[in-house]
Amino acid sequence: MIVDHWPLLGLRVRTDRLELRLPTQEELADLADLAVRGIHRPDERPFLTPWTDLPPRELGRKVVQWQWQTRGQWTPQEWTLQLTVFEHDRPVGVQQMHGRNFAVLREVRSASWLGLEHQGRGIGREMRAAMLHLAFADLDAEHAVTESFTDNPAPLAISRGLGYRPDGISRDAVQGEVRVSQRLRLTRQDWLATDRLPVTVEGLDACRELFGLGPTGQP
Image 1 (spheres, helix red, strand yellow):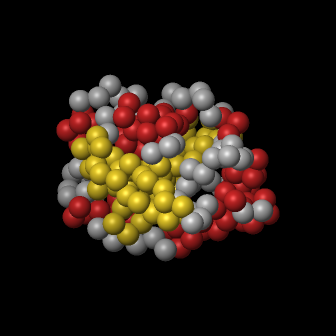
Image 2 (tube, rainbow, N blue to C red; image 1 turned 60 degrees about the vertical axis):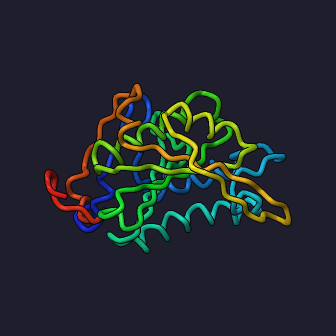
């Protein structure tokens, strides 16, 4: 079975209403369709790389290619986990977690997007909370970092609500303009001090080697 060769296909992260996992090929097509229908309002530019400006056909293809690319380039030294977020078995967005030299640094970096039609219902916070549980409770991370443009209040509010603290700023040139991002950092200590959602994780033991880790109970 393919899961024997790529055990990440068996990884499941669940909250009361969401399931985060890798999509099947047909579900990946549904995810691409979701992105084409819209991730943000036309007057917003929430991403450093303006990939949502692509024409619909190219945008859908980009979503599919990025899923394939992150799987194909995965190594225990550097990996990007692109978890599709499902509600009632329908994809609603993506929660990404990236690690570089994770076995040493114990630090993950997150990014995400949520279909416009599913925003405003607390899903963004819940899917990030699920990812943080995977990182801290199951992969023994020590730090989680993220960043958002300072004029993009929704993800900044999610980060603050989950216990992240300011960690400096970044300045980038985007389409001929300066865009300022707020970096944020969540430590294991601060995560443990927050009120956390119930989260269950299934299928991780078979994946630990892919994250550069030993069996459960070992570093």
